[in-house]
Image (cartoon, rainbow, N blue to C red; front, side):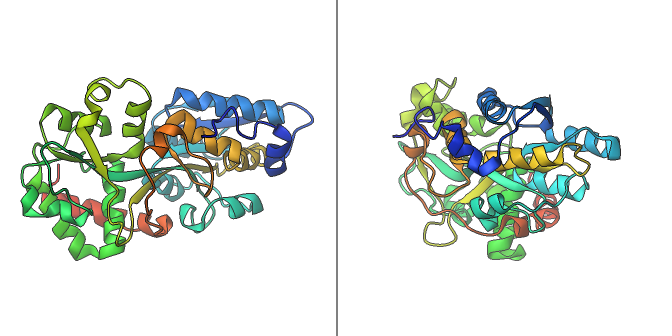
Length: 339
C-alpha cells in the first residue's frame, strides 16, 4: 500500500496542478468538515503556496445562513461541506459562484460536479448495507430489497431529516422513479426495528447490540472502526458484514464531501488554487488515509482501511441531477411517516 507520507510529497509535482505563490497571501475558509485530520490538508497547502488559511468552522446550514447574511461583505473565499444536498443548498442560497478551471474539469469526474461549476466533489463515501452475519443468512443485495417484507422489524436507519437519508431517496427517485421511491420508503418504515435515531455509527452499534440485524451507513464510519477504536463497534466488528448494493444495476450510492468558491470571494484566485489543490493526488490520498474516504479522482491509491472493503461498482448517476429530486424526497418522507 502507498501511504500518504510515501505519496507525491514533492511539492513541485503538486504545484503543477495549483501553482505556487511568491508572497504570503490569505484564504478565508468556511468549513463544516469536523475532522481533525483535515489539518494536514491545510498546512500542506500553505507550505506549498505561501497562502495562509483562516478558518471559520460550524454546521453547514449555519455557515450558509451566515454567508447569506454577510452578502457582498462576506470574507468567505471557499465553502467546504459534506453531502450533495448541502452543496446544492449553498448553490440555491446564492452563496457560491461558477468558476472555470481546466484542472478541476480534468481531475473531477463530471458526475461529481455541479452542472454550473459552482461546486465540486473532492471525496466520496459509499452508502451501503451492513448486517449481522450471525443472524442474517439472506441479506438484501440492493436498496429496493430493503423494503421487502422479509426484513420486517430488522432494519435500523437514520431519520428523514438527515441529509444522507434525503440524498439516498433522491437518488432512488432518479434511478427508479418517484412512484417506486415512495413504495420503497413506505416499505422501509414498515421494516424498521426502531424509530430512526442517531448517526451512522449508531446504526452500526444497533447491529452489535441486537437492536436490529440490518442497517445502512456510509463506508467511512465502518472503515474508521477498522483503523482505530470506536466505542461500541470496533471490539465486535467481526460480527458485521457488508454488501455494496445494486452491483447488477446502478451501483452503490455515493455521498460527496465537496466545496465551491464563495459568491463574493475577496481572494478568488487563491480560492480556485485551493480547490485545485484538493484535487491533487497528494490531497486525494490524504482524504483516504486521514479520514477513510474514497477519493473523487479515479486511480488514486486507497488507504488500507478503505481498501479492506473491497472493489465495487459505484452509481455514476449525475449528482447534480439527483439534487433536483430533494424536494420530492422530503415530500415522500412526510407522506409515508418516516420520522
